[in-house]
Image 1 (cartoon, one colour):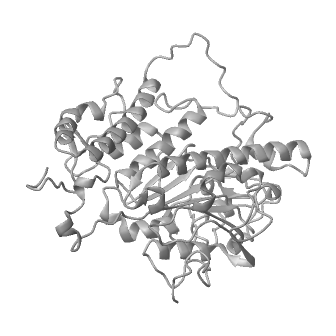
Image 2 (cartoon, rainbow, N blue to C red):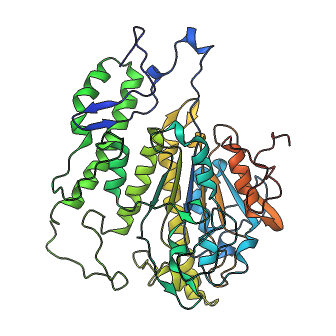
Image 3 (spheres, one colour):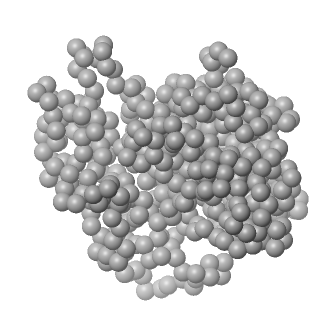
Length: 458
């Protein structure tokens, strides 16, 4: 586990019977001063692409001024603690989606920027590989998981007869190729097992779907953790303790879902969910979201993967947001506001809630020291929707944020407003460049966004 000088490998694992746990970056994993001049440890860059459905009320999203001296509108106010670590984009269009009706031609190509094939059958196509999968194809060999695709809603098939599209397009944003979407995981326990669970001889996770008693990976590896801790310096002991506590917190919440519900009163099932969710998936939507976001942090913190995508919901989501003050209906319904003030106000509250969850993720990433900054400083986290105003279904002037500095590559703290007809794929090409995956073009891109990468010489 360690060398004579007390150094330990970046790939050191905590091991138990049938379990392995990756570790965060510790000081003991970095070279000694004598070695540092030869092999300085630089934290890797990570990228996540986060999608929320149904667009936004733009007056409450788009700042009134550009540059660094701008005020956050109502929907973006939860971003206040991270204003200097985000870029707000406006004016970016997805021209390939203008030819499609409704939502599906916009969501299916959210990360490809290419035209979606209109079909009611199996001949699906999102036009090309998605931006996140292009990064995974390039750097995925460096981590146990090339990429990790997460979501909340199961895949929905069938046909939306109103617009003549298969509903499959509304269930995916990550595409390995034009015709092959990447399956997302919606069960937090299975995500956890992929990160920390038992592996077979080929390295594939072993799932115990029928297991009634939750097996704590942390408990299995606890003896090894104690041995490692005794050989670490004080700062590393604190880092290790904080990391193990974060794993333990997730485990406790996962265990709760597997035990009999202690409450005597049981709520009626919601009408919009005709099928009861898996017993292992939290029934509480908010808890489900938090678990997935926490697992994303752990995946990045342990360098289990450097590429993530997450869907808050499938396209055309009708999820009820009555748990929010002042909201009394579903997201999709409120997005079709018909310019009615009552619906617009509820629409804004739902958007603000999603932004708040994004802020929760950024806060978790920003509290983890890494290198000369934080884990967030070494990430770039895209957050956006595939349409602008849900009432118009427009794929132009999309609501988009990107947080994090990508290891000092990205200049943040700006509202960047681009002229009409500027391709969304210009942003994706910029993000690819920041991830050291430079391309001459991506989708319909015609440039990079120089305000984000001002030091780049083309």
